[in-house]
Structure formats: structure tokens, C-alpha cells
Length: 337
Image (tube, rainbow, N blue to C red; front, top):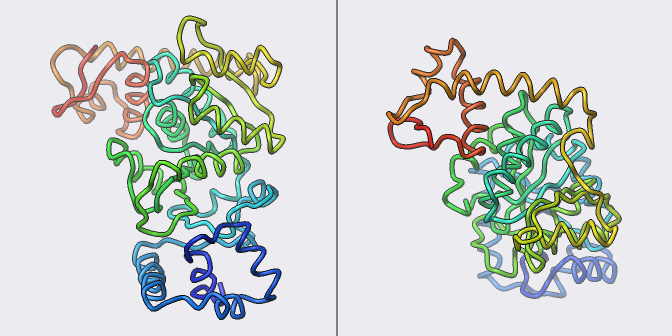
């Protein structure tokens, strides 16, 4: 973008957010005049220059809201981020998308349910948006990555797009980087603070055309994301949970109030017949692999030879079995749980 340095000088100035940025641009008419009014010091100028250099080195792009690649549904919300940093397959941002969120402390059943739904959306060329946290977010991204092809998932981070958090999801980060896209409204290299996660949730809700809420307690960040989605007029689906489990309080309350549509699975979006065919095929294939795993660790390459499949297919099916809590990964391979 022309005048990138000056635009970032404004956006990286203390106390400047989307509202003040837009007000300043409206008041002064152009970014050069805004910079003149703010008179940024040398430290800020050096920091912005370093950010631009680091972005170029890491293949990170700055996507302004007048760029055709900027997520069109996010652009429609009031006070959206004037610029996003993006790393990976930028074309993913142009896809129709659905947001899937929920607790970090998800059950194995809940994660399996979410992964199946995410996979179905990705197979229909609808990108899955989530926050790359452990638990539900992990299952949503992983489920989408099981589907073939690229542009399957968008991870929205609370820190810089180059800052991997949580560290447990490092391998997931690089898989998304290769086949999807990682975005943030924070500077390159920024280490997230607690308050940044609310803004991250706002962006997730803004990018997704609809939102699916899985397990979440009533005061969770996921419920805040649902609140933003409601505010933006998105269609909300909620996956019910047992009333005695605090993780069911959020989705159950939205269903009871009529704010969210009851979500019972893939058939809510793509039809019973297709879901039945997918599940039958998947179960047969996964059972074949599961039968070959016991208490002694088995590597992916050995499983590929024994089952007669390629490594990519084996990896996808192992992810599903792991999400179901049927196997776990150790240093030497996979063992039965």
C-alpha cells in the first residue's frame, strides 16, 4: 500500500484504535497530515520501520480495509480494524467462512463433534475461523485441515501473526500457515496481553458469516464471541451439552432463549444422506487403523505400510482418532488409550 509507513505510524501510536484512526483521517483528510499532527518520536518511527522489515522477511502482508483481499464480512462491521497482518495463503481471506468457538477445556466428545462439522464445511469450500487455542479451537482447525485442498481455515491471533501462542499448538500453527492463513490486528512481533483476546474474539465473529458455539461456560471468552456475532447480525448455532456440566451453560442458555439454533451435527448444514455416507466411510477407514494400534507405539510410516495408504491419509485419520480420545501420540508413534 502507498504510504504504508505513515499509516502504520498512526496505527501504532499510543491510544490510537479504529475509532480514533478513522476520526483523524476524516478530520485531516490524508495520512501525511495526520502524522504531522501526531508528531511521532524517533523511537516509534524506528519500531515501525523494524516491523515493516520483519514482515517482509517473514512473508507477512499488511491488508488494509480498502484491499479486495480484506475479509468482506469483517469490513461491514462498525469500527473494524483498519489493517490486518496476514501470513500464509492470503486467498483464504476471500472465502466464505464460518466461525467455530468453544472452551479450551473441551471434552473428547465435544472436540470430535466440532472436528466433524469443521471438516464438512472445509469440504464444501467454506473456511473455518477460530482462535488457535487448545480445546475447541484446536479441534475446529484440525477438522478443517483433514479435508483435502487449501484455504480451509483461518486462525485469528491475539498477538502478532509471528507469535505462536499457545506453544502446544506450534505444529498446528505451521500446518495452518501452509494451507490456510493466520491473521491479527496486532503489530508483527507483538506479545499478547489478556485484553487483546477480546479484540481477537471480535474479529473472529466479524469474519465468520455464521457462528457455531460448542462447549462454553456462561462467562467465557467464547460467549463474548457469540455476543459479538449476535451484535453483527450473524446466524448463531449452539451445540447442547449436559445441564450438569458448566461447559453446557453457554450454549444451552442461547438455545433456551431462542438466540441460537440447536445444532445437532453436520446434517443441520449439509443434509442427512451426505452425513451418513461420510460417517460410514470414515468409520470403516478409522477402524482399520485402530485395529493395528495397541500398547506398543506404532509410527505413521509403519501404519501406512500395514494399512496400504499414503502418509497424508494416515495423518488425517490419526488426527480424528486422537480427537476422539481413542489413541494418543508419544515419542515413538501412537498407542491405544
